[in-house]
Image (cartoon, rainbow, N blue to C red):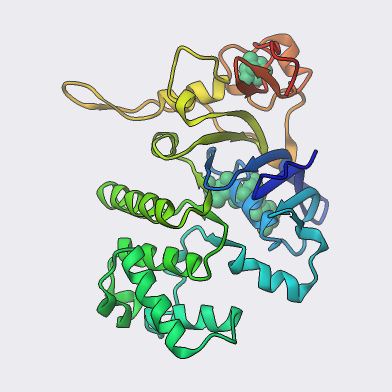
Length: 327
Ligand SMILES: Nc1ncnc2c1ncn2[C@@H]1O[C@H](COP(=O)(O)OP(=O)(O)OP(=O)(O)O)[C@@H](O)[C@H]1O
Ligand code: SF4
Ligand SMILES: [Mg+2]
């Protein structure tokens, strides 16, 4: 069903990479919507399909098989021709790529890179208007305007990442996908960057799909969060409920919550989830989390549980039975 108010709407999106005889179902039936001014987190361990989902939304997957529906501002992404798609990307939906701060052009100043992005997508815009927009962007991401005349290597990691965010919002898109925007930074810089992202978002009111493997970080900023495991969403809940332990959570989410470092009187305690994610080319029958799940039952190894509404949270797990008429 089309949700008219969603800026981004995914219905049963699946992505399969094909490598000779090997089929890797990296994303499996993901349905998710992002509303105006909303920040939605996508959290999961490495290999859970987060970046693949982002590439599918941006229509950047050339050889993979993509199924399902992806709508951005009501527009079906698969109906766009190459020219329309080029216009749509960056002006309506943009993306901060994983490790993007290392992909800035080393031989161009930051200012030239931002100017090029604007000129490429809006050739009609005058030089003065571009310079005015660059001034605004410097203020938004809080980088001294003079530093925009530097080359990327002359800036710190945190500044480079803020430049990448400035480029992503240069054309004032309605939705920005941020794929692990803070991961390469140290903890203090991560926090500053997150605060900056929140500040810019409050100011310009775009929606964000915020991808991360760090539930603790994401929980602080999101309105809602989707937990991904082996290409599927296994839990979808509100930012308010995600860190509460007295509400139902998928066993995988419980593991992620337990893995958030907690400060005790003497030390920082970090607990991980035992085991490793499945090989996506050889998924087990039933619930893919079963080999790592302390609560696994015989039926878990036979049937992959569907998503169901449990006390306002959507969870795919045999431990829970829908009490709100399904998801
Ligand atoms: N181009 C590709 N060809 C084949 N398989 C791929 C390709 N890109 C990703 N995969 C596989 O798809 C699955 C999902 O990968 P993806 O990069 O989307 O995960 P991720 O959640 O973004 O992980 P990370 O946290 O490490 O960034 C993994 O099993 C990965 O090995
Ligand atoms: S369905 Fe079974 S194996 Fe999967 S998370 Fe729930 S209890 Fe664990
Ligand atoms: Mg990734």
